[in-house]
Amino acid sequence: MIDCAVWWAEPLPNEPRFIGLLDELELGRHAGYRQEIDQRRFLTGRVLAKTIAGERLGRAPADIVFDASCDDCDKPHGVPKVPGLALSISHSGDRIGLAVTSGAPVGLDVESASRRAEDSLIEYALNETERLGLKGLEADERASAFFVYWTRKEAVMKATGRGLRIPLHSITLAPFDAPAALLASSTPALDPATTRMADLDPGSGYRAAVAVLTTEDLAVTEHSWHP
Image 1 (cartoon, one colour):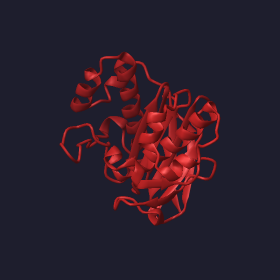
Image 2 (image 1 turned 180 degrees about the vertical axis):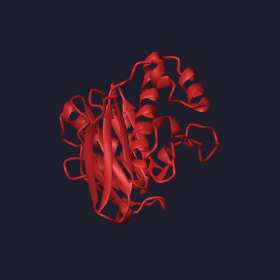
Image 3 (image 1 turned 90 degrees about the vertical axis):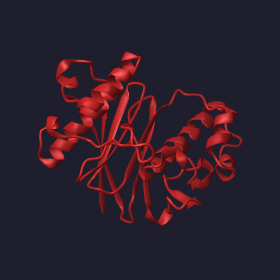
């Protein structure tokens, strides 16, 4: 059994007690966001991740240093990594999430449930098999169903570390009204036999999913986090 713990938080204020936990590279990224809310989302993700990682590893949050080097360009905007754990951070609106395992690759995605699902977005994200499942639905039902697919796809692609570099049409997910699962994949980075998924409950107005690359059964717990 693989344990995956997920924490949900709301954006922290830009206060010294939180900003002081960022390292030099993280401070540069934080300052680079033009909108205050984007700064706060980034800050919250890092503070949350350092706090939870510190608890898991028996260290103070200030002593947790992430390697966020991108696998393609080596710039510090990749998935935060720390020995002994696997992490995934996601945010949308006022919801920031962190998923943690003891090492099995993990991907988390959260999205606002109020977003619209334009035909162009559906064509872009879903393959023909998945699009068939949306036929006959009213507009609101169709948008809701689409974002079930979307969060699941984002989660499973994030778990590989490759994100949207994996063609969206190359993977086929279980129907939106069935338990989350990867049914088929034509990309070597993903195999249904080694992929476990679950839908999450991030709170009213949001949808979320998590994926872990493992052959073991997945046990997911969700928690609210407040500093």
